[in-house]
Length: 529
Ligand SMILES: *[C@@H]1O[C@H](CO)[C@@H](O)[C@H](O)[C@H]1NC(C)=O
Ligand SMILES: *[C@@H]1O[C@H](CO)[C@@H](O)[C@H](O)[C@H]1NC(C)=O
Ligand SMILES: *[C@@H]1O[C@H](CO)[C@@H](O)[C@H](O)[C@H]1NC(C)=O
Ligand SMILES: *[C@@H]1O[C@H](CO)[C@@H](O)[C@H](O)[C@H]1NC(C)=O
Ligand SMILES: *[C@@H]1O[C@H](CO)[C@@H](O)[C@H](O)[C@H]1NC(C)=O
Ligand SMILES: *[C@@H]1O[C@H](CO)[C@@H](O)[C@H](O)[C@H]1NC(C)=O
Ligand SMILES: *[C@@H]1O[C@H](CO)[C@@H](O)[C@H](O)[C@H]1NC(C)=O
Ligand SMILES: *[C@@H]1O[C@H](CO)[C@@H](O)[C@H](O)[C@H]1NC(C)=O
Image: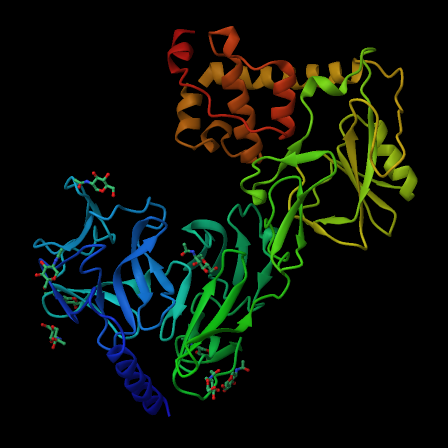
């Protein structure tokens, strides 16, 4: 059955290729040393059937290098080289050079490796196989590097995702670089999806539930569209899809930019129709981290995930609504002429999946609202039907719309509230002290860190090399938080006072409302003390 299927696919591909414009593509199954490609002339090396090609493909106004389905009108990209490098101009070239290295050459002659050949040494020739696998061979024909061992966001039929391997989503329809989600074949046998900023196992948003099968488990896709987990001796552990016994179809599995992984098919007999045969979730808001800090995920009418800011917040970047939200006020504006902070609570139907309260109280709904309102540290309170009131600081992460759940968000009203809740000018007369307290406490905290910084230089170097754990030894400190604080501390000790942030800004930095820029090099200062 499989043989028949295979032959049939080939026959169809040959027919397809006959009618296909192959001007820009060279049919060269064995790619010899010294061969080259250019984006606009010989742009790719085709596989024997013409279904797959390795070479340049357009990326915006420039070009990227990768493997794509060439035998169909939509040139679906299935592998990308150096995905985080910027695309190249039309006068670059791709070269399997005479030293046996595959390199991208800029118009000025600069060479960048296309594959990491460091450990494997020079190739004797290369080949673009009909399976979609691009292979570098040594002189005896052995495989020294193959794209199937280095998946980006897609696996093809005949390809497996092995222990420790990941598929990482791209950014968007127009940007193929590293995106926000990944799928990993874990050594415990579980196939799991996480947001890129994985901080704990709890951030997983999908799992096959096959823990305990061990490091031998792999995810494979057969040529009939059968997607399954099995071990190296072929024992079937879990079927994600059943195989479909029809030929003339190309299958591939991809983790999409929206964090959901899907099995696709191209039906070669039906105008190459692309269809989704299976998806890890139909809920576009399921992937945690779909929306940035302080924003929540909703499914738009066009069935695409969308992000909305919490009440009282605005988008950090209006060009990229997935990047999160920040408070909509300048820090000074929420304090009125009497030095009073004016705020109210707004109710919103959302759920927060990263529930990290600084305090949990047993309250009624109204008491919960009031408790947050009266606590100057509280920024939001999650109220659940069991009467649990979780008081939260910012930022709120992994938030989605949920009609059955209530969260109170503190909204600062510079003039008067125009919100959908009555204005609550509470804390009238409550003066500056709470702010002062925060400032004092934060200053103390920063001061402690300053001492650390002064005692150790190497603090900046540690920060610079992203090796903050050196600063704290074995202590259990949340690294991200520490990084924020060290960054703030480094800003605060700059010689030039005008460069130092104001205390208000420090407060906002501490609570995560605003981003902290990388501090300038201050090693010279630190060595002088
Ligand atoms: C490619 O090269 C290998 C090794 O030289 C050879 O065995 C094989 O037949 C060649 N394939 C084609 C299609 O020329
Ligand atoms: C394109 O292929 C032709 C035919 O093999 C060759 O003569 C030409 O040099 C190639 N062009 C580039 C830019 O590699
Ligand atoms: C290469 O192309 C870019 C834009 O496509 C152009 O600006 C540049 O001058 C070209 N370089 C050479 C050496 O032709
Ligand atoms: C070529 O690679 C294979 C493994 O893929 C290896 O067994 C063989 O020794 C290599 N041959 C040479 C000449 O390096
Ligand atoms: C695969 O799983 C089967 C069933 O549990 C087991 O008998 C077999 O030994 C496993 N193979 C390996 C290589 O672990
Ligand atoms: C998966 O499906 C195959 C038939 O396609 C079957 O033989 C196998 O037992 C199934 N595996 C599981 C875990 O159900
Ligand atoms: C990114 O992935 C999506 C599928 O999730 C695909 O449609 C799109 O073409 C990819 N973008 C690029 C630039 O390759
Ligand atoms: C492909 O299209 C043909 C003709 O419409 C249909 O019979 C076949 O079932 C389709 N295959 C798949 C996998 O959808």
